[in-house]
Image (cartoon, rainbow, N blue to C red):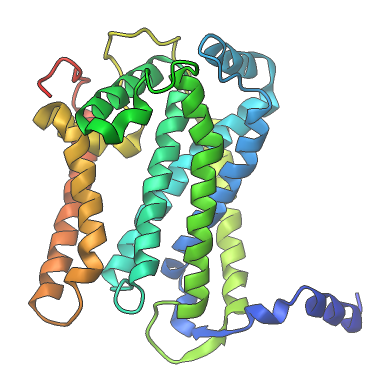
Length: 334
């Protein structure tokens, strides 16, 4: 292809808009975690669109539709496995991205709103992971939904949408499907648009003189994205996503998706209230970080130490819950 044709394509696609300067340090791998998260979310969206064509969100048909996919549609089964592993990858990447931004204090003025939009994205991602679990309609899904209903009772009016009697005309599983495929994705895209717009106008939070074009950042990033996709594809082939037997209410014999194990550990230790207290502590701390660390003084040191302690406790709680036997929580004191 001639240079003239390439130049014309670049001009018409406004490729020059990607040539704005960024610090050369921003081309390191740890500054690509956010973009890799975006890549994982894109894969989730694409595979999710395919899965909606085969999934039945009716309570009596949900599990059977997944069983049909697994037994009769090998390609769609692999896409489902890809979807599940991409969800795990997205959660791990967003936490790694958050930890990296926290450590280099990328939340400080004027980036407070950028940080808060990232915290909201994390909350929405948790919502997508939860509703995705519930849609399986197997034993783990039934137990997860029972915990959500119990948590809704503890939350009072704020938890009304998660109660079965909120809209008697629509089963709660169908409402979870609506959240998973419409409400939460719309929220994700909207917040993500704000997040990316702020990054573009505030710049990458890296120190150093701006002397590298953002376009050069995309080249190594493309390689990392290919590695990510290949890793997820390999995991999907080696360890297919599970589907337990149809769920039976009144029993607690499973553990949640690994990203929720820290909440499960809080329930082990503090009863059902731990389901609300643990997320409140995490997201409350994340929301306060830009307000607490505004200078180089004592507040900054305390914030960093508190963050390291909190993230360490989360990892320890996940390990504890993974190794501990399954426990019944619904019959514990509220």
